[in-house]
Structure formats: structure tokens, C-alpha cells
Length: 301
Image 1 (cartoon, rainbow, N blue to C red):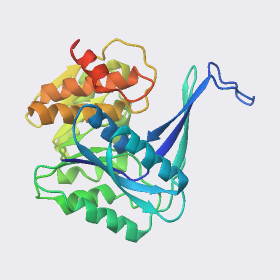
Image 2 (image 1 turned 60 degrees about the vertical axis):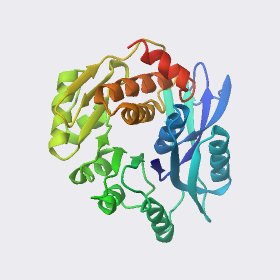
Image 3 (image 1 turned 180 degrees about the horizontal axis):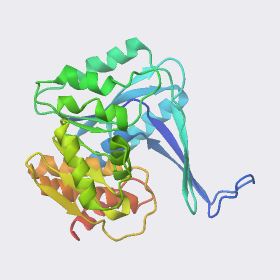
Image 4 (image 1 turned 30 degrees about the horizontal axis):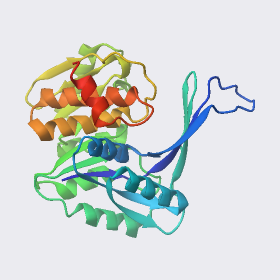
């Protein structure tokens, strides 16, 4: 079984406007409300690919109720913890000539509720997969991903981590099965400016392996991706051709596709191809990609 953890789920209120004028009243062309949060995105794409999984995390208030409702409608299994105070985030995504995002902070998570989540994670057993993805509220220590991996250490559970600098660096000593920075995040980790040069990306991906990561998957937006495997293999692939409609969730879709490919084949090249296909399919769609969209791209690789 795959479990995903999203500490700070959200409703993404997405507004489409041809040309945003700062300081003026703008009228949208259309709007949509979608579930947000990196772990939840992974769960939805896995579900679209026919891979059973359960989404874990926290929800609060009327926005939390709607997150639960949308998860149910999508057919995704979830086991969220409902908080009595606060409300889950509403993030604003403005789709215009450029993409603009306003992300809210989210509710405070009491220590007792955090322990409740850790208890639910403790039920994982040998052969399970855990995905830790995204930001955390300020009420949660930035060592939380590391603490989770420490609790699960030695239990033959594969853990994938998709998070920013400190959250990611903290877990490397516990040898995560997969980490997925993008090339900008990779540069921030090492204090360098990484361009779209795949050989440069490979150099720094291998440095993360030396720090403990087993497999490093680096997304490079329109330039494709790089995978450095624990077997010493390195794969490079250009991005498929297509019109980018929505970059939100593309990286999460790549993680989901990679895990789906690995589960079905236990072959890293196959997992890499499924990751590229899934990430690109979501980027070319107004929402997270379905199986047909993903497989159409996969067959072209």
C-alpha cells in the first residue's frame, strides 16, 4: 500500500484571466476550485493510474470539509485528521500571461494531533511506500520528516520525499528511496546557480546520493528530467512536446508516475519514463492528468 502525507492541504482557487492589470479591477474568464497539496496531488495521480493508496494529513473548518468532499468525489481513499480550530488553506492561483500564486499559511496543528498522525503512520509495514511531500505549517518542527523516517527505520518501507531545502536535507541520513528536487531547488541546496545543463544537474544529484539519497529524480520543467539511481545508472530525457497549461502539480505527478512505474516493473528506466509522462501530461492539462493522457505521452517516448 502507498500512503501519502500532506501536512497542509488546501483548496486551490484557480482564476483564468487573459491579462492581469496590477492595481486595477480584473474580471476573470473562468474559475475552478481544486484540491491542493503535494501529497494529495500524488494520491490523485496514483489513483488515476489505478494504484491504490491512502492520503493522510490534517483538515480543518469548512474548507477542510470541502477537501474531504472533493477527495471522495475523485475516488481517492483518505484518512485525514479533523482539527477543531482554524481552517484549511485557500490558495489563489492566477493563470494569465504568467502564473501567480498566493499561498496561505494554514491552521495550527496541536501536538496531540501530530502524535495522532504519527500513530497512523506507525501502522505501515514491510513493503509499503510512504510519500512525504510539500511544506509544513509553522506549528510543526522542520525536523518532522526526519522524525518520521527515524521511526520507520529498519522496517523495509520505501519512502519518497519531495520537499524544500531543510526538510529534504534532514532526511538524507535515513536513506530515502527517492527524492525529487527540481533543478532550482537543487541549486539552492548547494548554493549555486544550476542552469538547464543536464550534466551539471547530474553532478549535484550524485552529491545528494553521497549524502544518503538512494535515487535522485530532478525535474527541469521544459528541459525534461534526470534520474540518478542507486545502481549507478544515470538517465536523461528531454521533455515531450506540448503546450504547457498548468505547471502546478506537474512535479507531484512525476513522483506519482515514477512510483507507479516502479511498482509495476521494479525497473528504474520504466519508472523514469512513467514519471516524465505523468509530469508532462499534467503540465499539458488544466488539471491533474488522467491515465489516458499519461499513456498517450508514454507511447511517444
